Length: 162
Image (cartoon, rainbow, N blue to C red; front, side, top):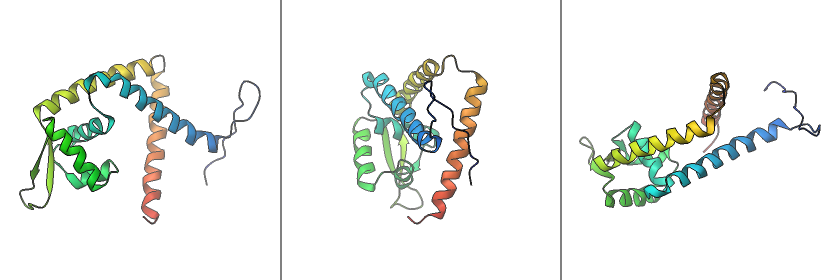
């Protein structure tokens, strides 16, 4: 059982219900960050789904199409259409796996690598702006806490039926 956290109070003295508020806060921060980043990269003519695909490939180029779909929580049809559009834009290419021709591997093309580099630059500027004024201790504590929550959620999901 999670330790009981004493509920802090709002400026007007009302207790904050952490068990409820934490989920909303994580969701709100994630949503607002994504929306702000989407607006920051709008001029690059790339959708969130497209930059997510390229971000995953930049860390693991040559992923199988099915693994990429799993990582992005997308179905086979959705990832197929997304990759079709990225291939038409010459940002990625699909190749049959050498050992099993039924498996497609996805690779960033040179234009995709270039776009990822631009996205990373925008991301760094974006992070610099939204994290300005926060101490290294605060950021490390936040990252450590969120990472612990993430790993507990992963473990929990492995025990639950699909």
